[in-house]
Length: 458
Ligand SMILES: *Cc1c(COP(=O)(O)O)cnc(C)c1O
Image (cartoon, rainbow, N blue to C red; front, side):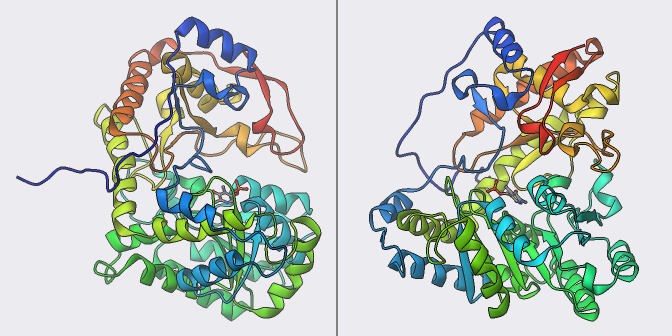
């Protein structure tokens, strides 16, 4: 008999979570303006809002905190992190930042100007926010396969090379400061980019003289998928794979709150000294001195340890198998989810789930509210709210897909929690015919509205 899946760690500290009644949740979600970001965490039983900064640190990471060096300049924690980043990515230069979007802010301050065009596979929301804030444009060159939800395609995070080349031909080099490859591609469902695609993008970018940066929040999960799915990598160490991945980039931004399993932190990696120097002045201005930039010494130490743990095969196998375990239960019941399953989350196709709710009524948000009411599980909308309004016309942008994302925190929940989540969503699925009306916006911000938007039931 094959031995079943079992976690590659055991539990040393626990935190209580509380169930609630449907009546309580009805009250709470109404007061929250039907925006799950506005809920208090004690109003949530299982929190799948995000996998960002919500992971459980290990005993070794907690021990590393104690050894932090809080010197303003040249701390040992900085050099510890620098050596780790070089070991895992191959980048000689780096700048610490307090989180991923801060890395974007610093890097883009150095590279992007008004009117620029930034192509990529599918830009993450804060990345796009930082690009549009600079009056530049983000262009997604996503492969069409990413939209064929239930059809197997091993690398739905790939860039479509023809779409990319069309952009590189259309605009002059001076208007395209960089190409951004997001690994894994969050917006298409935590889907990986193949090594072959990274290599091809880099070759094309070199021909046009344009640098490539990775938005690398989930680079380790991407490496795991390459090992599982791409020929020639099945016997490689994860860190051999990560080093080859990054060899096809000129630099990277990192939200360490994802694959580095810390609660806060980020960095920028650079291959070229001149990029590093250009960005350094903005790091000092926005984040802090170049050897700590937004992070305490102890936090840099925990991050260095987390980068090693996050790139261990057994850990990645545990994590990605747990996500698939949840996905499998939903798929078996006929719920349409992005398939194959992503690394950090299950993406439920909300339009297929709730076909009677009009697209103007925020389909995925409506489903997120229903799941919360059913169970106390907090998920997140990746749909029209997130897509925001077109900055030029002010009209809603309706994305092709309305996703309900169930993001799984790292090393936090057990498979019993996965069973609970699956049962809750299946219950909603069984009464989906009765859900015909969605939500309308009452109040919204001009940028990144999904965080603070207030809605009401129609
Ligand atoms: C989370 C994330 C970011 C932003 O990082 P923060 O740490 O949340 O500021 C950027 N890109 C991707 C792909 C992410 O997942």
